[in-house]
Image (tube, rainbow, N blue to C red; front, side, top):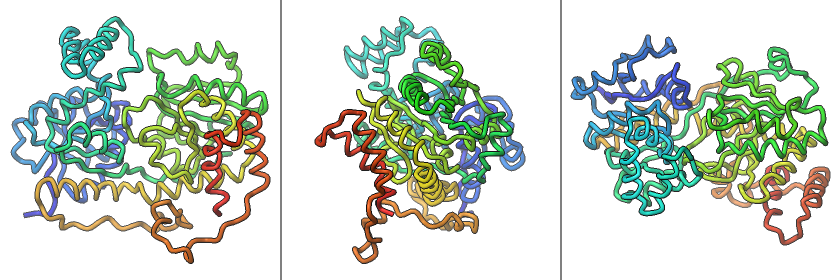
Length: 474
């Protein structure tokens, strides 16, 4: 008997424009070290030749005829229509498959499944059975053409969780949610594997994109929808650009049909300062990332996802500001700046933009820390090994294959970043002595505090303290 597993693998792949397509294409070559894998797709051919050359590819309609050849099945489920065939196949396996749940909230996906098939009444009944009168009232708003923020309070994920033998997620946050709702379900965590990109010179990237070298550029990357906090980001950038007139805000990502970003930009009078470029291919995406002085990766409400796009930003050594919510809260304070989603969100975002713009050394340190974090804790090989261990456990098999060793290139990402989990294991003698506070940085923070009108007991002061901690500790 081979030590490798035999897997049927269900996931969207490119040319389907989905973060999960990119995720699977990164994971599959590494997972193949531990499993013989057949790919099941929704009747199309992948555009990635490495996949077509190394994996057998079948339409999902063939799966039931071949189900007996596999040890288990992996169903990658996300909150988009690209997963409709996976949703159906998962239901048909009668509790034998492994669900890889990328989004805890699947409500938006299921709206499409019901309403696009003329089953609006069934959708309303489902919401009533699952969430009571409030759920039914929300469903009735949806069938009138509204998409209220309340959808995130009703994840509608129980059906797929119950249809799976076990569930694999990418964060403690998501695992806790499932344990609360389904305490007897076996739930594991696999790290989100992201290849560490080669660093691209900012001057080269800007030259290819036709961007001035002297501009201060803020970039948001990812699908442009109402939950990416672009209204707050645009307001903060408008105020920021008064202090930094030679600045530009670039939005890279496919626009949501229900979210008119350009109208918002026009209403704020930011047409000359803001650029919406739409979906960017791999090379253009890399260049926009390299061209950025600061990246924004905001979102609220959260669907319980772990953001691969954020990890790609961090892997490219870009300083990034995120929302303090969901899985983002698990990130160490040393690797990103976190902004609460509350009444002070826009003002705090503005002050962090000013702070990072005025401190190039701070931006560089934050970006370097982010890259080391991804290099150490989000290797694709480690993610594949997490899969192997969890699948072996679920199948009751002894894992006999070894982890994939760290490459020489990965070892060169030094010095190692000391994370909070590591600090807890060190003795006082091993910890570096404290350095005096940087007066220039504190001056910037003091100015930000003064402009916000914060008193000494205001809880927002803790936000500033956490943001500069990684500098003052070094």
